[in-house]
Image 1 (cartoon, rainbow, N blue to C red):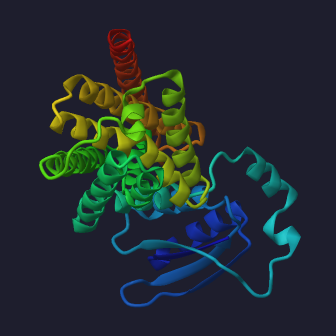
Image 2 (cartoon, helix red, strand yellow; image 1 turned 60 degrees about the vertical axis):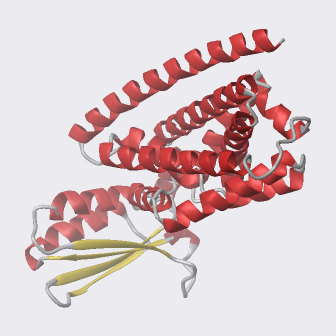
Length: 335
């Protein structure tokens, strides 16, 4: 369930009540406002509901000077809602057709926070790249897994995919900047380590990051799709973040280590693998968001978002084909 509180001018009361009644929430109450707000309404909706209510409230109140809508998850409520309150037959039909559980605003806030380029992100990127470099060089699977656990690479990937689905250029730029800076910092620190330790070219973990096959593409596609699903359905994304890190962190670090060792062909192979993984993860995540019905509120912005999705999909598919050709040529040369 979710708790929604809306503050608004008194002259909008009748319209707000009509919107609430149309959405059939579990419970609601109207009260006088506080501070600069004249009226306030508190609403409880079932899980998977509330997007239409929030959209209608925003459409009604956006022209007003003083208004605010706040959404919070509900851990528990007493008395417990009766089954006929929480899910009527009409609501059950709507829920069966619903393609997403998380609200658009919740998705946006989460990915926007997770792709902030701050010192926490930078430090975690540095630490994860150093740990991954040591693990790859020492041929230790456990250490490589430890590096992927702390790698903060899920945020910018999901943010870019969501930005494409919503047609949000500012979020797209923010996600791109964070992703490029993160990968660049990680690559740079891994490369710097080659000046202080010999690179173990016989490491199986290293060599495996230069092998490019269909299963690698499938892994990256699955990682991006799982990440988008975990976010849009409200499931914990901690383990999914490790999946995304599997696809991005080791090939990036391996490429840096090979470059530092003067093995340019192997470094290129790992870089191609990284590029394929990034493209596949973003493409599959974007498609999942579109499938789940994540789109802007208004018709005008929906048309812009639809155009953005088509353009982005075409670009990423083109990049995927180009990288696949490079991977094939690389495998032929190595073979």
